[in-house]
Image 1: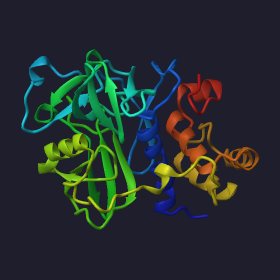
Image 2: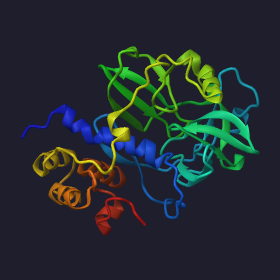
Image 3: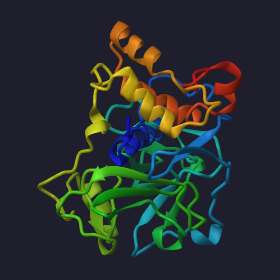
Image 4: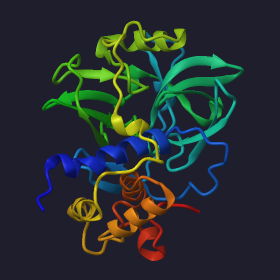
Length: 301
């Protein structure tokens, strides 16, 4: 069976949504007990998942100022591959993120002595000693969206002191209101702001609206971002194996595993396509140390 470009990108698209919305900022009641020290992965536009080296992305003190016309970001990569805990502003629930999955968040001011931010649509409060508030103009890289070849890509920085984007995430067909080749900013993934409207975006976030975005009345939603885990993929085991095998090396612990994945979907009701994407993201397509030595595809415990 021939694998189309769309199919090859499919798991990559899901990987990116899971990485960006779950690993980066998904609110959890439980502590992130064993997250530190695990291998960190990035995803490219072809759905390839690879392990990235740990970096400390702290900005020198002269890059941090109290006033800025360009807007400010919150730098979460101040200690390399370590968890940063936060409190969700609306609910008080605890959550965690890791700056090596995505370094920057929108700065929304201070509240109750803590730094207020938005990351992946979540508004949270974090201890000021855990992060840095940095002028956008002093960052070598800030995560952004762009359209190329009619597809929407999200460039994610993990170190704002370097002009590099380890993850280039394919979000699927771009909405018609976004222009080819332009740079857009968004910290919720639904409403987009042009380069010259970064400060306006922060003000909108603070005011609880998106009035100055380019699509204020027409939010963008990636299908896989909110696909319930308790849904069912229409891919057969053979079709899913073709996709997995096209992305993996012969020694991968994921290779040929689709029959087991679909069997567990049918038994327990967990979407096999999402299951495959989580495994690919957490294990670098079945090649990580924990996958190879312990058959652990999901990085649990």
